Length: 170
Image (cartoon, one colour):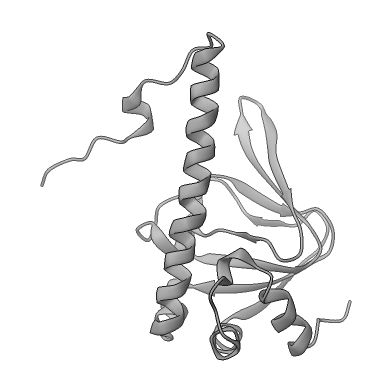
């Protein structure tokens, strides 16, 4: 399958939440530092627990994100063009395991960037990190709303110690 041309990629990136507030040069710089990656239907992109290295932007196709729940996989979400995944690999310390697995639901093309390549474009990196903070904050708000709903309906809710890891002093 043919890769989208650069003008198509730039038009798509203009619609991506991760790139809110970016100008055309910022987007071009991001694309220039990114690598293209393609995945066949059913191909695992990364597995839960693996060290995270890249953030991905879906150009074409779809991916499924899932976690292990007992003996089976629990699908969390399906993402398509213009959506991102793997953001936490850029903000968590190197070597921290992925929180979920991702596989291509159909033939999928992505842009991928790691922390080191992003650091080579500091103005763009600052904008990416600010937008990642907003994205993760909205996900945290949603997770908090779910816990509150569980509490309101009488479901067991996790103890706060399970939500916030204890910080060890060195």
